[in-house]
Image (cartoon, rainbow, N blue to C red; front, side, top):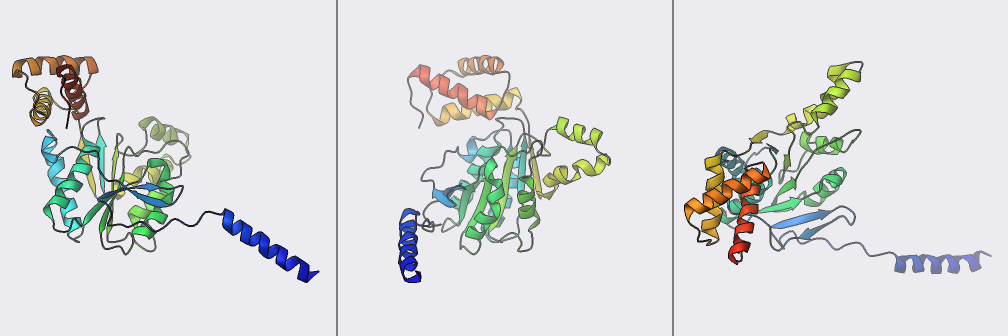
Length: 285
């Protein structure tokens, strides 16, 4: 009986091996300056061209720009640097600044030593896996999560907390974490108040989640732009893309656009420029 079963089991095992996909090949971490983490396949996908704007086009956030740029520069040189949380108004240039600072530092330093790795909010629980993949690599990596926040009974923040605290192994020296959020404490105010009002010990009820933001060494706040700054954004974009429009007309139309949008921000300025370029029959490079 044994002589009959063993060949059968061997054939079944061989068939299963043929059906199962081979493990993904290791990613060449020098193949690009930016990557996207795909948690389902546990792989890093190179991004040939990053969607970003130049650093000098970001107006009204000079202080935030200088602080993040200096932190990024030190990190790329192998010096101590902090994790950074960029929080505040929508469309105020938070994610644009992260991508622009990454490009600016790589342009400054020989060998382009810095890589940007985007991880999606829902993939935060896989952070230990990606850290294991990056640990020991020769390059330095900015792990970047855009629009980070936590709601309800979401426990994904515990994975992030372990990364920011370092855990047993410690955060790799060649990795730093940058995140953007509309919320300073990464959770909505009504959720904070609700947990305080229903808990036996209100202070301890929200301590774990609220203190998550305290684990970022840098807090950079962003706010809606005033009118002169908004016009500077519009004029900078128009000049960069060769939109030849009279200054008074440009400002009048930009003012009307911002009123209809109910906000003044870098995003609104760029949306106006796209509208204007379309009407003028101009392509944006």
